[in-house]
Image (tube, one colour):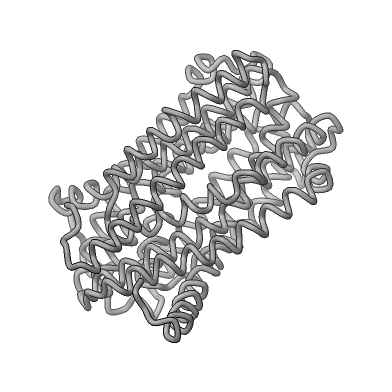
Length: 458
């Protein structure tokens, strides 16, 4: 960024302000989505340690569906943002209709997979007393997979044209429905049957369908979408535009899956260590995941800002948009690390009534504080790279970082050396740090390449 010092500060502040305004509703929307898992965990913790452990395993497997959908459908925001930045909004509706076909296909496939995941729990060695309730949760939540796929398609379309408030409003509305519904079906209140973990799964799936319907209706009636003609006609699936989305989305889906898969595999491995460590891990990872929603929301805004700059042919804008994302992320991660360090014991006590679970969870939260900066940095870099539609090499970087370094070290320290949950978390820290370094270098190099008017790799 070879900008004179007297001009650099105003430009950076302008970019930070624009990215922050776009990111705030996204952060709140991401937090509301994550709070669905938090509500499930908290309600389960008030039921029993066994139920909490079962929901911990169930949500880990359910996360597979979420990660796959997020990753592949993340092809929508940069595609839409670049069309918007280039003044080609009339082409967005056709992309959206093909994305709906892709979402439905993926959602139905994941419904079948999640609803029949008993073999996975057995293969992973999840404790025998935990498996029945974990499978119950999965069977309850599985019908929500198509709704989740549609919801992501709706929100990514909206975010791609820089309309982010609907994600926040509909996400918060879902929480208002999930808590009483989950409570009723888990504990058998208000005339509902007591279904335990199964009830939480059903409540989550129901909430997802309500959110998807609300977002779809908003796109049909919202003033900001009228010129896009999203529902102007019915389009049968066409391979060429779907293939274009998959060309971008599959590497991103693979990358997101590799990162999330590291956490899922960690949860399943810890699940073989018994109820105490499983429940404690779930409390700590819930809190770390809540903290991660902030840089993830910023990264999504960065994707849109970078994509807009690419669409309008502004290489300097690409660099400034990425820099703004990094600046905001540095501040949010410092705050998250301090909260986790200083409030570990108090917060853990709010998540569970079991003293042993709370004590172990507080120890793990200190480790979570240690990877806040690397986790935020890799999210910011990945978001900026998505805006450039650069997805292949980041996917390779992710695999090497998480599975070539993080998982082997975590398994060796946690299982082979007997370090338990602590050892597995050390692996998470190493994997995230390696990914953060390499992805950041990748974006810096590509931004410089654009400034020299060198075409980006296809």
